[in-house]
Image (cartoon, rainbow, N blue to C red; front, side):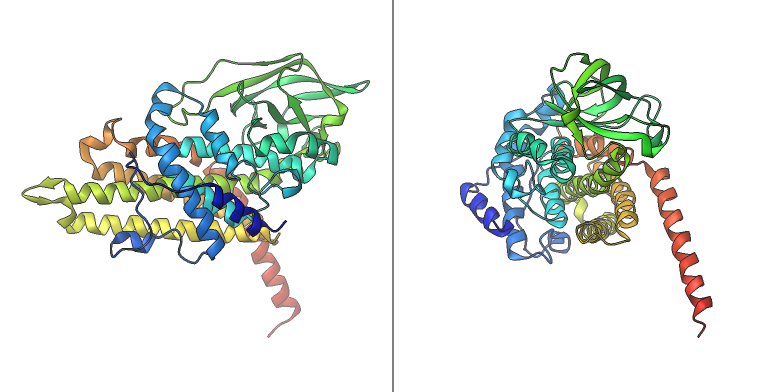
Length: 430
């Protein structure tokens, strides 16, 4: 079934209403600063339709609860399952196992819109989507049909297990082992900072089945309840409080050999393929937070008066708001360009994903932080949503490859391209 047909059916299920919310997201159009940051600019009609659905869901189902989820550390399972009814549980998973079959650009558009309602919850949904895609893309037909339908409906939730206490950016040095014993792999080791851990039903695990280095890594699907699987304490975090984070511990944990995703030794490649999309997803979540923060700052400047006039009359603040708008649009263009490159499997896709993640997460955090500053003392109060956007997206600059790792990846790509360019010039002199 064509993706556009799937989406038209999903859109028909959801009647949009627009109650007041903690995060006011105005409709596109209107002669104000909003027009220059309109997230629907350049989109197809189909893309505008599901973007509208995502914005509506963020406004109605997420934003009114964002503060409560944060302060009480609630994992909003039922809300996410409502989102899954709209196709947001397996956005780029194939339709034959319940996915929406949309593109990477479509996915970015949706995550940006959802993040205006709660960046923390949307970020977890992006990880869940990545896990579902990895099973769909690299798993055999039995794994796909056994697990993807429940993941796409979010009856089951997934977590991604790569990082370890001793290996973060250096993922190829992971030491969690999987040794064959009859029809099972016996797992020993631990994973750190795992989103959804303890609450999730499935764990997409990178473990060592062979020698040192990336070629000794394989990917296994571990089901909650497996003997020898346990979890650490729930971490206390600055942000991302609507999703639990725990260590995942394996002590002689037996996993069927049939739960191998791909082939032995494919794990590192599978992990990196997942992270390319994950970087686009997390950058898209930053876009949504930045967009909402600009809207909140703009509205605050209009009503807050100092020295007898609205702050919006201050030329300094006008210039700052213009800089924020420019940064947001630049970041959005980079993210959507990288998403298109990834969808098209272009040779520059990996570098473009790293560029987009590096630039967008840094720029969007700066935008949210400036928006908080424009609120003055009010921005530091938890009654105001802008401070939560600042706290929730700070971690986006760390996970999925932190800043220094992205720069190293990019300089290697740039130097290689320079070498290839000069080689061609020497072979074919003008």
